[in-house]
Image (cartoon, rainbow, N blue to C red; front, side, top):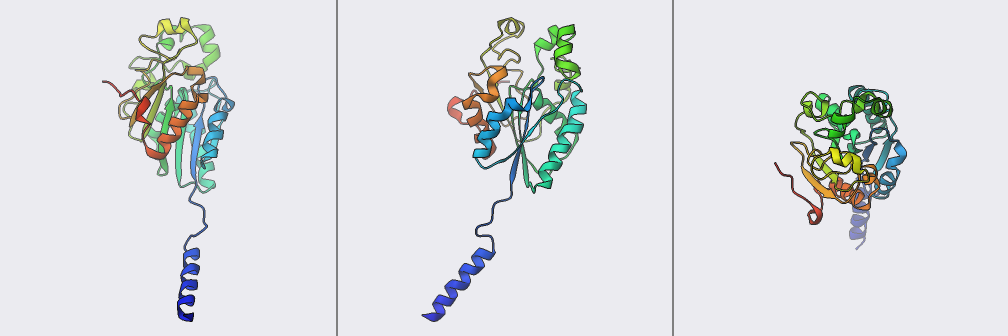
Amino acid sequence: MMRQVVTIIIFIMLFIGEGFGETAPPEYVVLLHGLARSKSSMAKLESHLSDKGYSVLNIAYPSRSKTIEELAGEVIPKAIERCRNNGAKKIHFVTHSMGGIVVRYYLKHYALPELGRVVMLSPPNMGSEVVDKLGQTFIFKWINGPAGQQLGTGNDNLPKKLGAVNFDLGIIAGDRSIDPFLSLIIPGTDDGKVSVNNAKVEGMRDYIVIHATHPFIMKNRQAIEQAIHFLKFGKFRKSVSIEPSG
């Protein structure tokens, strides 16, 4: 009897010594807001991700004052360094609008061994016709800066030059608009800035359309739930999914 008790005690001690009670290696989620927005626009998403156990880095960056290439080369490496310094073993990204293009540029040109999954909310992956029509006007340049002018739909514009993605990507597009004037410029269904078709990109893992507008999709309850689901499982809930076409 005593021998059995000793054996059980030794087993428990070994079990504790081999990791019982230790926390799992941290998974970080880097949030990148859209053009002419701030980190506060991603605060609700940040809170929900934190509640689900993710370590979250909500980045503020000067989206209006630099090109996408400059932003990708300056902002993302600093975010990655902060994650690594805090012991990150896996680094995910959730982006809004132009933030997705910044991530695409970085991942096309730089390796990230710790890369997990990426969720893009209303990304102009094939550009926006709004930029085609208004990009050279004074007011557009003043509001959106040099990066905004790079987001047209032409083959010489940056989004199309980046080509297919080769990472685990889920895209959430919106089909509601609060700007009827801009929606007149955009062919097909849109969110007021980007059409649902232009949110797609070759190589994406999954894609859904929800009832949300471009300025507020990152605050949308369904978008947040779907983003978290993709980070965990690598796919969206199919009950609301619209399959990619073409």
